[in-house]
Image 1: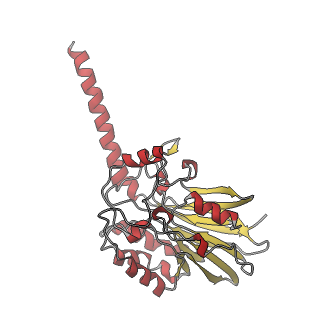
Image 2: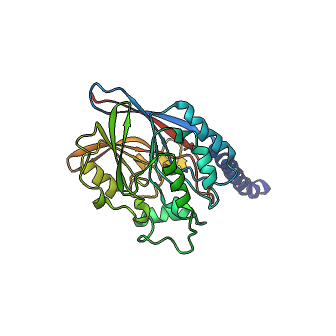
Length: 312
């Protein structure tokens, strides 16, 4: 009888020990196990020389994250042709100087950026299970443009000024252009759809006819934005926000995307179809996490080096 009574306790203890070990791994190792993803995308005109694009996203910088800063600084050694920052740089109201320090070497290269909700507002402690509940209820993001009740204002203006001073193009509901290796590149960007700051009507009209390549950039890959970009004929859309699911199940993948994008496209390169057109979509899993949930499991933090190649 003692053995039978002791078995449930042993099982419970085993489950708790496994959970604790998983948490230690997710927070202590994987959340700081930074990776570089490499992807090729055939979107350039025939005969063009390849271009190397470094995408960084969802840094969620908290003061004191020295390893993350050093890793981001080291990415300049890749010598990209240009950089795309898809937002959510902050998770700390005092984090702007550390973000600018971390990205300083990369800001020596041409770049473009959009912001995410965590650039504008500080994070709040919330039950992670709410993401699953919101998915089941078909709800995503905040209700309207106002911040959540009690949200803290982040000094995003200082971040913007630092990027602008370095020469990076601000794509907040606007367009911009860069000339790279003799190629005219046009960019169309949106403010964050997650908090309904996107204004596609301000940038509608499709790719620039006199550009060699037109790219679309947005923080959160909501379907309304992807449909608009794809329907207008953009060949490639770059986004972040999802954290790749952040907590994934091995051999299965992400459980949520924190938007209305399907979990099968929570990270990496895929295709998006709308209005008879097809675009490549690259969603970065990002290299950080909300300061209140500093864990990642089966989804290492990352940046991506995209090699744009000529179309077949």
